[in-house]
Amino acid sequence: MLELFPGNREWSIQILRLIAQAPYGGSDLGETLRTVERIQPGDGPGWVAAWQALGGQTEEGARAARDRGHAATARGGFFRASAYYRQADFFLSGDDERKKTLFLDAKRCFLAGAGLHHPSIEPIEVPFGAETFAGYFCHPRHPRGARAPGVVMLGGADSLAEELFFFGGNQITERGMALLLIDTPGRGSSLRLKGIRTRPDYEKPVGAVIDYLRSRPEVDPDRIGLAGVSMGGYYAPRVAAFDGRIRAMVLNCGAFDLVEDLFDFFPAIQHQMRWLVGARTIAEAREAFRPFTLREVAGRIRCPTLIEHGEDDFIMRVEGARRLYEAIGSRDKALKTWSREEGGAVHCGFDNWAGLFPHMFDWLADRLA
Image (cartoon, rainbow, N blue to C red; front, top):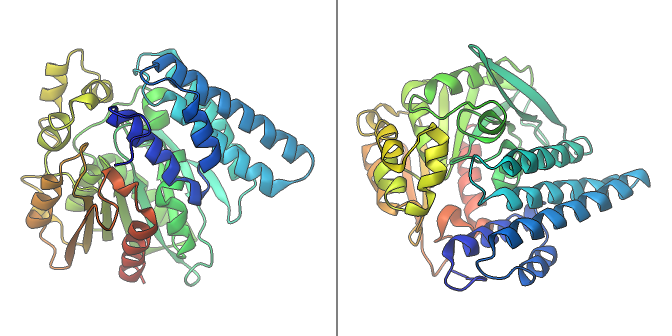
């Protein structure tokens, strides 16, 4: 893996993640590399300050372009600013107030860019009992028929609905499918602003999300797909195991047991995961994640399923993806393990989205055709 911060895999892969978004409108390579040059290795406050400053400068430029009537320039600037504010917040602890402030900055900029985007990106809310999840209904480009297929995309350990648009989300809409990005429990605005923690029975909150998606007049209720990213490689299969309305599922990373495949495999994420469940200690968090396993339910998954995972993933172990693949009950299932020679070998395939996205989303479009 390319290490722009030698010896620091966590910082380096986060830069690779941001670079990967560049072709999809979520960053700029030059802006990213110039900022990296200004950050001293190991300087945590410097990391936050550098990305927050870039976010502010980029947002200011976007506002100026919008005031001059240059909508395309403004849209691109707002989207990149959103990603840079997100970069600033990434390594902050959950109880740091800047986590909320930077999220609101990122959301504000994404909303500004979404308002200038075609096809429309529509802010929505989905009720679930006493809770409400915020997100976006992204209209498809060149929809397939009067009612298009609809896809729910689920991120992982505190991903934001906003950033998933550049994590393959806009490649779903490019293929004629509607997309629902939503901050379900333990993620984005639900966690930061409302204190809604994650839960193992993810089929329950996502069931309400699917209800909403099927109610949209633009969507064919019989062609609902599911996409999971990173720890979403647990969330999405859990949903598919219990919700027979899912017609096809793709996973960018697969997880069989979150304690074995993530919590204990990548100790650097343990404090983050502690925040997701509201635990006081690491030991308490580990116990809280014990029910986050697909051991007893993966065989219930009957929809066509594609799992993609990198052989050099040091964040989520590839063995979890293999075990999930073997346990899934569907006859139409595939596992693509990306090698370092072809690219896509690191977490979420950040080093080869040009290969991974077409492979994954063309497969999904075919199953929802």
